[in-house]
Image 1 (cartoon, rainbow, N blue to C red):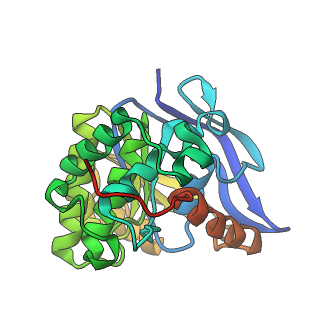
Image 2: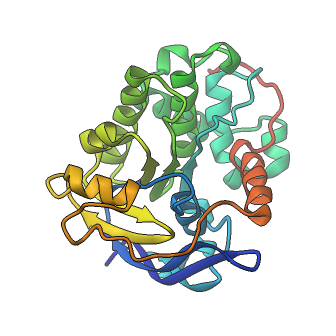
Image 3: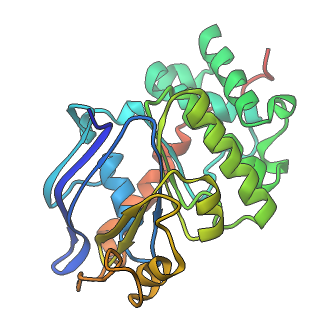
Length: 281
C-alpha cells in the first residue's frame, strides 16, 4: 500500500494562479523522495497540500488510507527557516515537537513526560547534537539549528517526514551534514521522507527517487540513474530531456496572497508556543 497518494490534485490560488495541475503520484513506504524544480514550480505547495496546511482545489491526497488533513499529527515538517525559539535550549526546542500530544497548557508550563524528554534526547542524538542539548538555540550555527528542527520533527513521532528547502541557506558542507542526518533519521526510523531541494548534486547524493516539478506538473519521475543532465535541463529550463522531461504545463505556480498568509501560519505551527524551562535532565 502506498504511503502517500496524490490523485488528480489541482491547487489554484486566487482566480488563476495554478500551483499544482492534475498531479497524480504514489509514493511507497520508506522511500526517500526529492522534489526538484525551479522556484515557483509548485514544490512547496505539493508539501503544504500533503501536510494539510492548504487544501486542494480539486482531487484527493491520502496518507495510508486516510486524508492528509486527518493525519497532520503524524506528519513531521522541517522548514527552510528554522522557526526555533532562540532563547531556549536545543533540548527545549526539540521538546516542542510533543506539543500536539501535550496540548498548549502543559507545553506552556513545560510539563513534559519522561518519555517525551527521552524522545527529545534520542532525536538530538540522531542528528548529532546530543552533546549540545543544553546549548541555547540562538548561539548555534545555521546547520545546527536546522538539525534541531529535524529533531523537533522526530519528537513528533511521525510516520512521514517532509522538508521544504531545508538546506537553501547553508554552505555546501553544512547542507550535506543536514541531509546526511535527515537520511539517517529516515532510515533508522523507517520513515517515508519527501524533501524539496534546488541543489541537484546534493539531491543525487541522498535521494532514492526524484520527482521533477515544473509549472505545477510532475514532468519527471525516476531514480538516480535516470536523472541525467538532459533531464535536469528539462526540469529547470524546459529544454532538452529524454522524452520524460518534456514540459506540458502552461500555468504558473508562484505564491499568491492566500499562500503567503499560509506560510506565516506555518511558523506558528512549527514552533508551537513554549515558555522558558530547565536544562535537560
